Image (tube, rainbow, N blue to C red; front, side, top):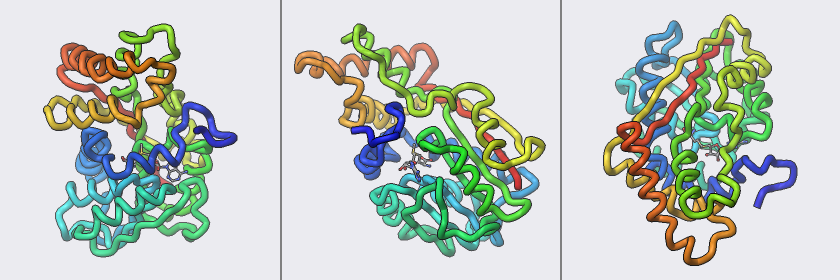
Length: 284
Ligand SMILES: C[S@@+](CC[C@H](N)C(=O)[O-])C[C@H]1O[C@@H](n2cnc3c(N)ncnc32)[C@H](O)[C@@H]1O
């Protein structure tokens, strides 16, 4: 159920609670792969790479994706001296704690915090802030950027990513068209963020100067069986039950087949499941 005041296209916390334990598999590692690539090829080649003196925040981190991406992309002696992993869903924070228990990060803290209100964090605290594929889920994205700006030290670097094409929504819509083309198509959270220029505008409105923002884009084509199977599980499972609202039992029974067919069509068209991404770097 959508909470009061929240746009119907935005997922509620309950959705992310159910998602926590299966998150990495059912995203087909997409958010982790992209962030690892962004850190390796964009952040570490920038004027402000992460290093042993860095203090990094991963905000709306899910089950610790930013921390996992840092560990995957940096040698141990370049890992940040301190890291805060936060999310407003307690089950995501628990999943992060579990996944980071044996991590090589020197000092990592996992906390339940609202990205839009980081009261407990002092001004000018972090050297780097990661906000990976979350901004479109916030009811008040500008407030989240304001908090990123406030908590970042002068010269500090923020990385904000969002989808330009979130493939599962296209595949699910294709499956819906096969079974009940008369019913409304599934909504994508924060659809305006898929449009060129919206992410940049929000980040500027949140306090970052236009001249200190750079944009990049990336395409990820997921083509290995294991990750395609994980994404298929997401699309056929309870997390996407909204797509089957109003279905009869018989139509429900046809859903896995329709999704599999739509996945095949996506793979035939793009060589895999194709994600398109906007990447924004902003310095304070
Ligand atoms: C699509 S997931 C992205 C997770 C992770 N950053 C990644 O790269 O995969 C969005 C995350 O944002 C979190 N979230 C949504 N609204 C939030 C808020 N107001 N404050 C903090 N986290 C929030 C959700 O709980 C979820 O874990």
